[in-house]
Length: 403
Image 1: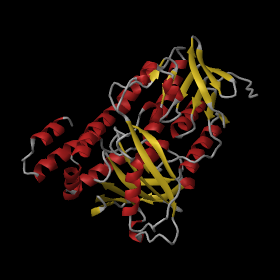
Image 2: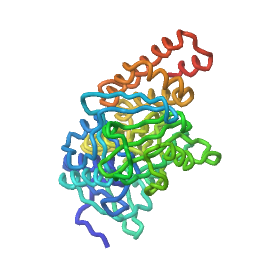
Image 3: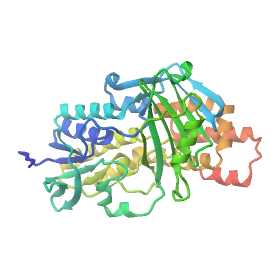
């Protein structure tokens, strides 16, 4: 029997970056905070583990103990051909293994005063008049004033809320493997500090290679809306075979997971005393699949909403919904509309990016948080018109008008 000598102000379900960050900020503000994680920690998490520089700046922590590699550029290919590189003097991203990174963030939460239950699965949540009740698989029940659902793409907390049952097209699929990075892999030394992004082979998505200290994270991701007619694992297998430095038969554990992409500026992320963050809230960049930044940022916003509205003794959902809308939805909306154009006219988009290096430099500033998607899309439109000398087909005009 699990016994606590207090009733928490906040229960956070899920120990990923969003949950750990939300717990840390709640506890740091003096709220009694309980974090519940279904797995024993540290636990493996299928993820490319690429942290944009804006994510690192947002955390404002010394991440050196968990950084696997520092990235100074990107290699782009189209169907694994026609490569070009974008290189910078300053880092554009950092690579981590999610088990070590997530554990690091949880340790920061614990240092701030968070209590933790690990290896305990939540089976139901229910909002009451004076708070939220959480039931575990073993039958224990906990009561708190507020609940933060950070339990990932198949969130039980989200499924408990009526608005998340609405149909949306925001789920994609990723297939990934961590392959041991040993001398049998003749990986190009000059590309050790580049991420590799390949377009054209994956419907509504792309393939990637992230070189880490002891592993190569290789995967594909796409918005496979007709999953019964498509086989994502076949796309992954074909992509892996196309990487000439991977010896035949050299594989690691292959895992798949949902990509809960942002899908609508009207999507809800909260109700009453229950707030959703990160993947549970479908806060994922629909163009590049970046989720860690949005998980961490939404975790911070959720904590702030609870801290502010605890003083008033009322539900924080309206405050949080507005904060997410103002802070995140604008950029995600432009990423969504542009992703639909890119995945419809992938070759044209690729040619434009390769032809005009200034676009690549500008996009890196988006990753750094110095620029936004709206500014990037405006530049792409201009360059695309230059490339085609203003002769745009009706289909292209229609697609571009939506961005």
